[in-house]
Amino acid sequence: MTPTSSRITLACLTALSAASVASAQSPRTPPEQSQANAAKVVAFDEAGVKSDKKYRIAYLTECVDNPYCVTRLNGIKDAVEKFGLELKVFDAQWSLINQTKAVQNAVNEGFDGYIFGPLAAQPSCALWKSTLKPTEKPVVTVTVPMCGDADYTPGLAATITMQGPVHYQELVDHAFASCKEKCKAAAIGGFIGSDLQNYWEAAVKNAAAKYPNVTVAVQEAANFDPRIALQKTQDALTAHPDITVIVSNWDDMTRGIEQGVTTSGKKPGTDVRIYSAGANKDTIEKIKSGTINASIALLPYEEGYYATVALLMAMQGKPVDGYIDEADLPEITSKTKTTLISAENAPEYTAKY
Image (cartoon, rainbow, N blue to C red; front, side, top):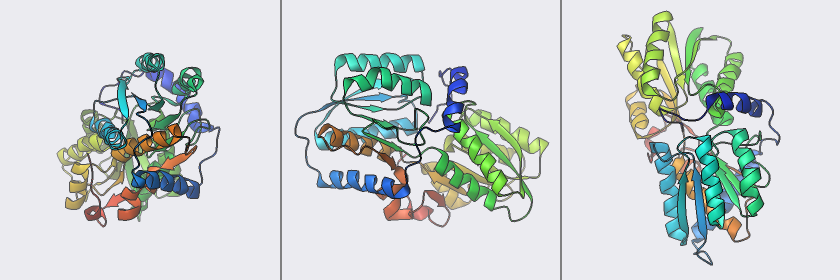
C-alpha cells in the first residue's frame, strides 16, 4: 500500500497504467482455479517438509516503511524460517529507478528465486521481462498484477494478491447498496494515475451505474494520506452537507475521513456511513464500536507467507503457475468466509497489522 509520501513518477504511471487496466492481456482466473491453486500452497505448507537445500531467495519489494509492507515482510520471514531458506531484501523505497537498480543488483548476486512486488504494471513488467525472466529462475509476484493482465501473468511461478478490481468492487457495491433511497456519496482514493487508483475509480464508476439512486458528488485523490483525506472530507461536507456515504480504499486514509466527518459536526458511522479497505486492528475496533461501517480485509501477512511457499514449490519443480486470490486462503475461508468485514462478522476476524 502506498505511503503518505511517494517517489513514484506519477506522470509515468498515468501514461502507462491506465492502459493496463483498460485492456488486460490475459483473462481473469476463474474462481475455482484460484481455489485450487490456494489449496496447493496450503497443503504444501501444512506438510511442513524442510527444503531439500538451503535456497537463497531475494525479496524485491516496493516498500518496508508502513504497516502493510512490514507485515508482509514478517510473513515472508516466518516462511523462510520454517522451511530453512535464506532471504535478502531489496527495498525500492517506492521508486521505479530504485526498483530497476535493486532488480539488477539481485540478479548480479544470483538467487534461486525471487519474490517481486511490482510498483506499476507496465514498467515493472518490462523490468521482469528484461532482467528477471532471462535468469530462468522462478518469480512470484505480490501486491498488484502487471503486464496488463487481469491477475496472473503467464511465465511467473505464481501471483498472489488481494488489492484490485474484484475486492474494490465488492466494497463499493456494498456501500452504495446501503442507500435505500436517493443519497449522495464521496469517494476518496490514492494517487491519480496509479494502478490502484485506476482500479478504484473503475469500481466507483461501475457501482454508480449499478445503483442509480446514488450520486457521487465528490471523487478525490488523497494520496493515501490521512491528513489530505481529512481536508478532502471537510471540503466535501462543506460543499455537499447532505453526503451520507464515504468510501475509501485504505484504512490509514480513513482515519482522516472519520476525523473530517466528526469536525464537520456529524456522527461517523451514523450520519455519514464510512466504508474502507484494509481491516486493520484499529478499523476492526471502530467497526465493532460503529464509527466505521465495513472494511475489505487485506492480508499482507498471508500474502508474504504464501508467496514464499509458492516460490519454494517452484524451486523444487512444483510451480503453481497461476493466480491465488487471498480470499481463498484459510484466514478468510475458515473464519468469515468473506473479505467484507462488518459489525456482523468482525468478532470472528483477527487483524494482524
